[in-house]
Picture 1: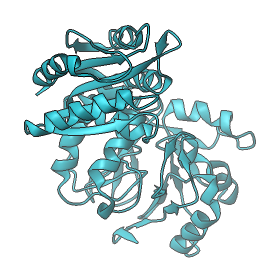
Picture 2: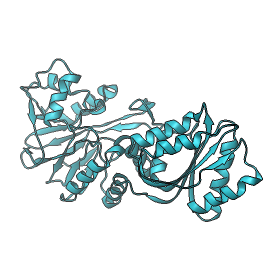
Picture 3: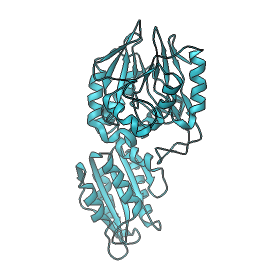
Picture 4: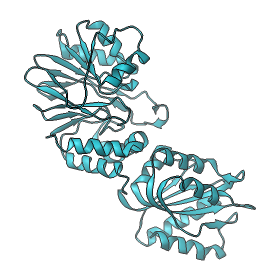
Length: 382
């Protein structure tokens, strides 16, 4: 597949992988994207995961058709994009590797054989690499989402090679770019919102017609939509005016309350997403927490604390820099309710979280006398 008449796509689809980065479910697989630019000089843009090395080599050899590449541009050292660097250097002894200084320093951590000092070109923000009729301009993007990341901009074709930025799980637009990109961004890059905001400001100064990420589809149309979503996600603003109701229930009593709250909010015209934290995809739950403007957390007490699925969920929210939301709490306990205290203490470690008072306490099962407190909570969240 050609991106343009002089840039060919040589990436591969991984349908065999079950967990991306060892933790995120990818039932629709993942793309490892790689590209070749043909000019007076030939540049390979990143490699792929060694899991799919044979397929990538077939794609590269077919694209080269006997020609010898001059450069391998390494934008990101994460192994799903860099695993074949040493093989490329071995097969093409005259080739130079172009990367940030931090990436070059990292390379010996992953590979023992190549002499990286003699065969690398370190580039930084604003540096250029001439390929003949065009040049690549490099854009530093530290912590999006590793410290060595550097992007490449081709002003001739108006293409931004964006590393992991604007990446997504899955393969096609039919799978829903927004949903899978949201899940990808908030779980993987989401902690580094400030750094993404810096990158977006740099991107705004470039004339971009196409974005070529390292995961997911190439973006050629409606770029404003994708950039606007990245701006929303990276600034931690809600994407949707609505409520995310997440619950962790042991015997069903807490779930009953959570679903009652959700139904009551929907009857008032509020958009609601619910999640059973013991059973749902954790990465989807986290993405939905960031997506919605308000959140209700309902949890059973457990071992003088909170039921672990809720604890794990809140731990992940903190790790990914969750902030600036209004949150209501419901705790359940048969003799000594403790879930509310633990949830509050974890939320208070996050930035700009408003906790709705009072915390609603249920004793084992929802009863008629709990109706007023639940109704008050619903009204506060509508």
